[in-house]
Length: 141
Image 1: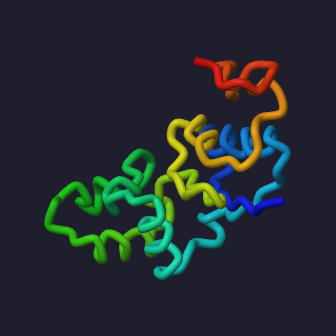
Image 2: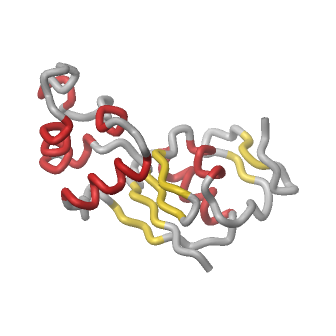
């Protein structure tokens, strides 16, 4: 079975939903609680590069020191923004999932379905009750 890694925050509903979708595919991922075990600089840069996203797209503003640090100011370079994320891991948006099919920031949570190696094994609803996958394992539209 292929390895899946999720950079997870158990206090985040989206992250919990993504973890549930991974498990609903029959996989048990490597779970890295990135607030307890933050990635190092090389890992964070590799994740961002693998996602093909600008560094700013990986910054989380809500519930973080984003505003207090003035991170919306375009004066900050990518390396400086990464420095801030390393100093304050809560600034790293989540969840980030790595599979053999790609690396994604899985917001919204159903984004993870695009990179899971195995299909869903049954119905899955988000914590708020919103259906994501039907009983046959098909994506709800």
